Image (tube, rainbow, N blue to C red; front, top):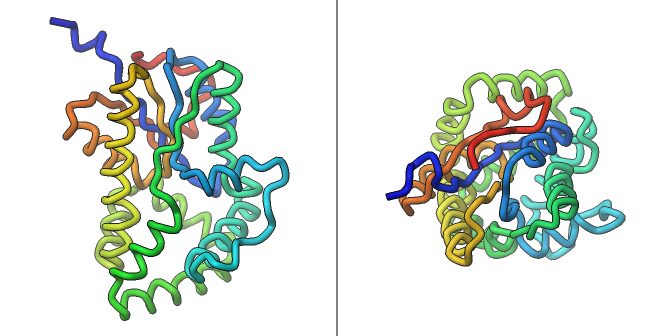
Length: 238
C-alpha cells in the first residue's frame, strides 16, 4: 500500500479576483511538481480574459446582474491595484505555458450558471441582490479595503452571512459549482493528470476541498490569507 505522503494531492489556491496576487501565485505554482493547472473559468470567460486586449464592456445579452458584477469587479480592481479583473487567471495560464503544462477550465458556463441563479431565486432575494450590487459600486475605497480585511480575518463568518442573506446565491454560485468543479477535477485525474493545482476564488476553497474529499481525492488548501504571504517557490507536497 502506498504511503499517504506519496499520494498526489490537489492544491486548491484561493485568490481574490480584485487583488493583485500575481507574484505570490506565481511563486506558489512555479515551485511545485505539477501535471496540470486548472482555473475557475469556462470557455467564454477564458476567451475574454485571455484576449490580447481585454474588452472594456460586457456582452449585451448577459443578464443585468452579471453586468453589474463585472462593473463592480473592474471598479474594485482599479481601487485595489489589481487592474483588470482576471489577472490571477492570466498568471496561472502564463505559468502553465512556461512549464509546458495543460491548462484546464473547470467552471460552469457563465450563461448557464446565471440562468440557473435567476430562475431559482425568489423575487425578494433578487431585488436585494440587485440593490446591494448597485450600492457596492459606489462604496468608498476605504470601506472596500476594510471589508476585504474583515474577510481575510474571518472568511467563514463572511460566507455564513452570505448564506443567511442570499441562500440561493450561496447554493448556485458556491455549493453547486464546487461539486461540478470537483467532478471535473476527478475526471482530469482519471486521465492521468494527478498532480494538479486549481486556482479559484477564495470563497470556494473550503467547499471545494470538502467536495474533493467526498470523491476520495486528497487536497491541500492555500487560501487567500496565506497566499498573499508567499514570497518564494512553494515546496508543498506533490
